[in-house]
Length: 223
Image (tube, rainbow, N blue to C red; front, side, top):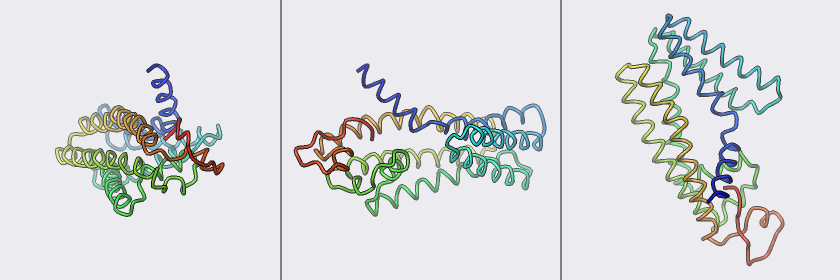
């Protein structure tokens, strides 16, 4: 159990590295500043923080895709909010993003090219052909169904809170959905995914790359 928890924590760090700070902190700062100052100051502060985070990533030569995504999303959010002079409109891109995730997950399931496989490919660089094997694909399909349910729940809840116009409640729920619940979903995905890969009996990704013949050892680390 101890080894499993260590393995899961290391995998979560790999997947989430850079994502939390880059995309989660600016909206929280926006809500905090808004409670003390006007809308314009809150928007300038959150966008400025996104620029600072992106600058730090570039300066340190870290992965910048999450920081860049955060900057673009926050800039769009600030535009919506300022244009309508409505603080809650700052979170429209979050709702749109959740809704798009539902659509992408659904399409990926229909065409049997599961979203979970693509995200794993982008994170780890594993060959896509390995994910499409009949003794590998089902594990990623089933995990994508879990994500699909999560994105539907998130979209419905965010939309309902947006309609109330309560900024503080939106930030609280969005923070919980964006990190703690995401950690839980990713943990379940990893543990179940590894379990299913072993049950399917296919080759591990290293065995596939090296053209190993069966019987396979299977995937022992990473999903």
